[in-house]
Length: 197
Length: 158
Image (cartoon, each protein chain N blue to C red):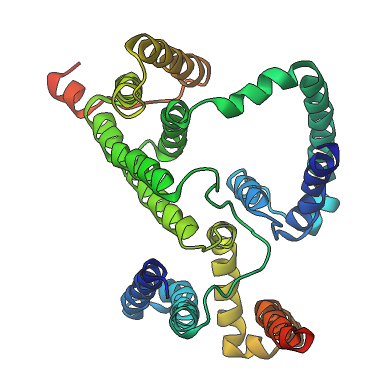
């Protein structure tokens, strides 16, 4: 229990590095955190390691203190906390729905936000049902505004010529390799299986 | 071939085509990003659809990136629960629209616990009271969040 638990917690710190330094979240939770940064007007990037180092360190220390508090709490009331997992879903669902919809309503104070939340909740349900991962969707949504701004600047300044710049070509090649890698790996595994058989 | 997955992919392609078609008529600045998103979306989902139809079963065997439905609950039961929860949400939104959040929260909590959760009257009332106290104490008294009146209060001039 301790080993997997420690490993699970330790990845949070690691995920913060690309999120804070490059604005590239390492997981769905970090994508949501990045969304929070952008809402609060904090722009992730190299400035977070120079100008806004105080904010970065406050996050680091929050993580450290949170882990210490978690350990102390678990030592004291772990048995009681474990009982929460036995609470029936039917009792938790209305509380969760209430919090979700209050959260979406308080953004603008409009009923339309509740309808949007419902539609995207339904969409996410089908994504889970049919095996479509949601973190990339959240990532696209959170980074969309930044990408739109810089895409427009690039197109206005260079036209389609920006696509031929060396750094862009290298990044696109890396992207293609990342997309194609699972298929290549799968094909390799398939071809190895008959050889072993 | 999984019919649900094929249908979901077709819906995504439809959304992508609609977005691209709508963006075609817009000015360059407005149309650039929707087109940059919708055209690759249509192409990639079409590839996914072809793999789904002509591929050999499930193509993605990489580690899970997202939550999956638990295996300890039968798929039919899990689906019934999810559908049950989703059916209640439009009702909740309607009640919020009619009477506003402060009244909608206890009404929704009590109705959901009594009819969907099949909880006894005493526990339903207790949990509703706890939820309302939490809502009132945190969101109204502590955070002072503004919640608009519902349609009925507006009509009655309350």
